[in-house]
Structures are given as structure tokens and as C-alpha cells.
Image 1 (cartoon, rainbow, N blue to C red):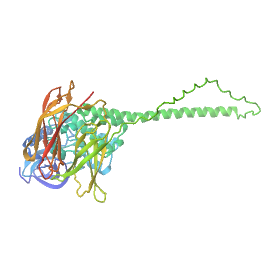
Image 2: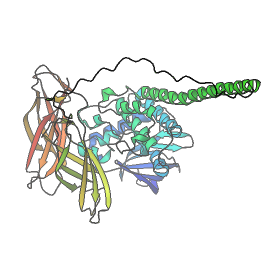
Image 3: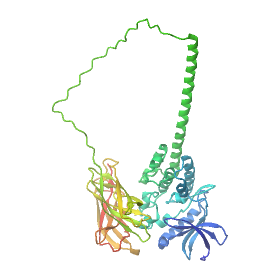
Length: 514
């Protein structure tokens, strides 16, 4: 294929996996949306092969709600994919321009996205990257694009962080040892609808804008555990439609009841006026003495038992839940994104669920330059225990003077949940390709009579100044570990900073339930 196959007209946008241009196809003169994949993502031949295979399979799916793939391949400028050009822009463009959409506007768009996902799922495919910027809007409705890209972004954890949007990515997508199913798209579709109704991505603090009737199905669909979600997008949409119908029926029923009440009230008024005309006016005879009303005989009140002299009174003191941040510092990557590393310490009286950390980057004049947020690495933190944190800023604010952090914590949502007794055996850190480090080891379940699910290893790398320069995790090869059972585990790491890591710490982590 010659280098002059596509003539670039103008850029249309930039995403995590590459840039999109409006281009003219020299073979037929038609305009296309040409996506050029980042060279760093196309360096892995295996990932490129899986991407090409995913595009071929998805291109064979017939659905009016999928953007048509014209062609894909490699030319002199690298890996590309040419899609139908939709001039109206994306759903993200509309949200950015007009803010939140009403339910009557948002639901038809997301229903069409649901149709596209249903067609992919029936063909045994998973989109895995459903977000508003991948939903194109036209006069004929919404069309879903960029299918197949998850084969590129799930090469390793660093690539996944840089190329995906965590607000729309299901948590299991981060488990590079697993194969996500349709429930990952259930998460993405619900996150898209949330963005339409609130004007912000999930986690942005605008969830109050979601109509109350629609909150239960959306909360279920965005559950951290895939098993807790709806099994597919069709079931999710049926729940949303039922909730919407109940919302419409309630105001109608209230209106009918109010109308009936007013009609009955008017009838009583007409009858009362007519009867008063027949009787004439009534003047009471004040000369007649009216006996005073007699109070009813009531049983005597029992006397309250006096308080004992030696009684002790007091208030019930609630448990204190708080957390502290330690050793926060930031490192910039070569593509101008950045990470904030550090620890969050549980200084509460009891265990807490994974806390959320919000960061504000301020300059010397205390002006806000940007924000970022993320979660602690551990799902459960015992009192006095520290968890490493690793927060990505896709657009790293340059020239900031300080970071202002805030921690949002909550007690355990499931009583009796606790840390599992696990051991990480034979942990070794070795150099891989392209500056990557690989930790390998074995996870062992030391619980008595308890099966542990989703056991994982958490690794922290330090430089010579004992600063954190990378945090990563990887799940055991086996989803469940019976008592005494062992399973291999591996973690891929890409350290940041100007020097190689000098030491590492690795931990085994999982929760068990009552």
C-alpha cells in the first residue's frame, strides 16, 4: 500500500490509542475517519495480530449501529484503521457542548449503543472500550466505533493506564491474565448513560443528577465485581426501561387521583351551597346557656421510676474513621502524563474499604492547574496499615507548586470481611524487554477451611532515595485457591524516574468473606 493512499484534510481528535484524521481515500475519492495507531502500541507483533483479527471479526458483524470499517492494515506510516466518516461528531462532543442530556435525549442514544453491543456479543465479541468519545452521532442515530482496540491497550499495565479511560473501563479489564466477557460492556454502557445524564464521567461527584428510578440498575451495572452485574446489555436495558416506565406511570396516577379529588370536592361545594339557599341564614340564640364541656375520665398516669443515685449516663461514641496520606510525590512520563505515588494509612478504629484519593494541582498563586483521582491499591486496609497509591494524570499540569490531596473513606460495607492469610513465595524480579521488569512468584492460601478468590501480588519499586517509582499488581493464575493450594503469579512493571530501582517490596493481598 503506497504512502499516498490517504490524503489528510484535518485532525478530528486524539485518544489513548492514536490520532483520528479526516482524510480522502485516493482509490475512490470518499472521505473517511482515518485512525493512526500510536507506534508504541504497534510495537508488539502479537497485539497487532490480535487487533487485526478482532477488526476482521467485528467488521463481519451486520448492524446499522456499528460504524462501518472500510479497511485496516499497515502502510509506510504505520498501523491504521479507516472508518466511515460521521460529520456530526461524537457523544462526548455533544456533552461537552451542551452539558447533561435529559432522560428523553439520553435513553434513545444509549439504546442504540446497546443494539450495537448486542450484535457484537451475539458474534462472540467484546468491545471493551465503550465510552462517549467512541459513540458517533448522525442524522440516522448513534453508531459505535473503535471496536478491537482493547487488543492493543491490554498489552501491559502502563499501556492500559495511558490508553484507556479508567472512568469507563471495567475493573476486570486490568486483569491481564483474564479474558473479559460481555459484562465489561455492561459496565461501559452504564458509564456512558451516567455521563449523558450528569455531564460528567462516573466518579465526578454529579451522580445526584441521575433520576432516582434509574440509579439501582446503573449502580448494579457498575459493580466492581463482574458477577454482581447484569449478565448482558439486553438485561440491563430491560431493567432501565422498566424503571423508566414506572417513573412515567407515577406522575400520571397522581394526576388522575388529583383530578378525581377535585371533582368530588366541587360536587360537595355545589350541594352545600344549594342546601344553604333553601334553609336561609341561621342566627344562634345566645340566650340559651351552653353547659361547659366535661373532661373525660382518664386513668391516672403512672409515676415515673426515679433515677437511681448511682446510675451512670453517657453518650455512645461512634467509631472514628480517618486516613492519612504519606510520602506523596509526582513523576512525569516521556509523553507528558504523570503519576502521583505515596501511601494512605488507616488511622481509624476499624478496617476500611479501598479509599479514594482526590488531588488538586496548584501553582504558586494557589490557582488550580488540574485534578486527578484514584484509589488505594488494597481493597481492605486494617487499622494502622498502609496501602500504596498510584494515581495517573493523563494531562500532567506543568509548573505546579504543590498538590492538595483529599481522602474519601468509608467503613467496610460487608461486616466480617477481613484480610486473607496468604503467602507470596519465591518472589523474583527480573529484567524484561523495553525496560520492563517482571516479578514472578507463587501465591499460597494459608486460610483454614476458607477458599480465597482473586488473590493477587502487589509490588512496590523504590529508587536510591527510597521514593516509590512504580506500583503494580497481578492476579494469581487460578481464580480460586483452596486451603493450602498454590498458584503462580506474575506482575509487569515499568519504573519511572531517572535511575533504575534499587529495591522492591511485594505483598500478597485478598479478602475473605464471612
